[in-house]
Amino acid sequence: MMHIGEYRIDTPVALAPMAGITDKPFRRLARAYGAGYAVSEMISDDPSLRHTRKTLRRSDFSGETGPIAVQIAGSDPEQLAEAARYNVAAGAQIIDINMGCPAKKVCNVLAGSALLQNEDLVGRILRAVVQAVEVPVTLKTRLGWDDEHKNILTVAKMAEQAGIAALAVHGRTRTQMYKGEAAYELIAEVKQQIKLPLWVNGDLSSPQKAADILRQTGADGVMIGRAAQGQPWLFRDIRHYLAEGSLPPPPKFDEAAATLLEHIAEMHAFYGEIAGVRIARKHIGWYLARLPEGDAQRRELNRLESAAEQYDTLAAFLHRQELAEWPTDYRNSAAV
Image (cartoon, rainbow, N blue to C red):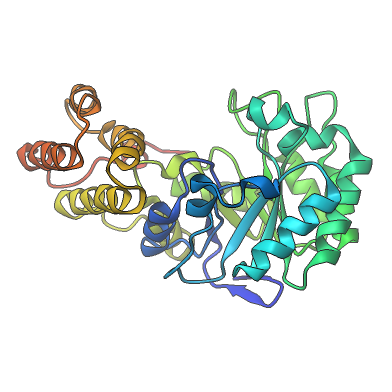
């Protein structure tokens, strides 16, 4: 259990914010499978973008269980402060500041993890956003810009002094992007030096590894990103493993197939047919990657433009499978 301001997080297993992935359908699914906390996709602080279709969709939290955590991105302290006020007025219960995104289009405008190159600006942003709103403000970041400038200890202390309510750290630098392996030694040092609730993030691809990294770092919770793509039941399995020290029974194939089809139908409904079909393709690919002939079926599905065709062809493929359980990598090996 951990607290972010007034909010108690009973299950310290969170869905990390991922632009283009952790939309409303995926957040709902993650919570249904046991995630105790979920953060929105990144929302730009640019006021001219507030009423675009993309931002309106990313700002749709209707029907979601709380706390509603909205991640904002930008590089101007006052504009970020105003974005925080705007999103709180729209229903955000927690504001998360993005200083971790490594994408070029974000870093090229000196936002996301590019901010880590300017500690003075980091401090001004943290103070401006915390002072702008009465809800808890959290920070998602990385170890630093590159191997020669790993300044997470400095940034973490700045965050604590500014009044940040919780910190999430991905165990890579920006220049690493998602290459190589995440490193956790500095995250353990962060936990020793600050009193903020701390999420550890990066390469937590199995319940076994999540438990191991929690022990190594002393972090308060794990934040799961790419590992949950195509297997939302990972949240349930991590939750069970942390509580019991063992894996629960694997997802039955029919249960997992029904989850996949429900997820696709929700995306069609949320985005509309054209965008829904396009956005569903990557999720389908992640789900099918572990199934026999899954890659070939993915290629066939990628050629379809109709929501009904996409759904029906996928359903027929799943119906032909003769598996009792949905395959998971971390049940086939030591998975550490």
